[in-house]
Length: 99
Image 1 (spheres, helix red, strand yellow):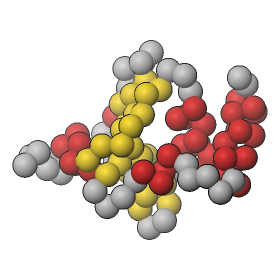
Image 2 (cartoon, rainbow, N blue to C red; image 1 turned 180 degrees about the vertical axis):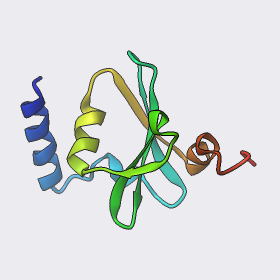
Image 3 (cartoon, rainbow, N blue to C red; image 1 turned 90 degrees about the vertical axis):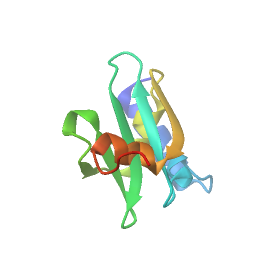
């Protein structure tokens, strides 16, 4: 699937009434993602109503990203994603000792 097709598919999902993956994010949970090919890991959450990405390459510092980028990334075949406790992000970002 081309980048254009993924963008169109993501836009259709966003315009639909179906909740997207970001609906799994709450005060206590984030989306944890892993790229099997590169080994990279990152997280998504919502801050102030806007999606944010916390990527290993950026030392898990939050960066605002459009919802379409989130949808396109999660649609990639080599990316595994699932909802996890926010504690995972806090530990990787160095904000918690895991307790």
